[in-house]
Length: 87
Image (cartoon, rainbow, N blue to C red; front, side, top):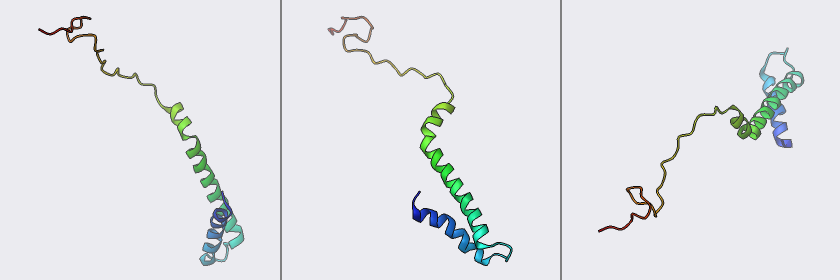
């Protein structure tokens, strides 16, 4: 997280409390709300970072369906190898 991001996380709630009743002090309430915002932001970053691993752990193992097999060119439509000559 950068300095500007931290200033926004803490400065925003401090400015917001200017319109709150007197029992909410900008320093006390602003820092408390900034801590909550920083914690939520850190949690989101952790989820984004480790989501590929978490998806792999949480994914249920379902049986995969086999893709249709492609016949090699040496096998004819009858399934007999070497029966490729057409009359």
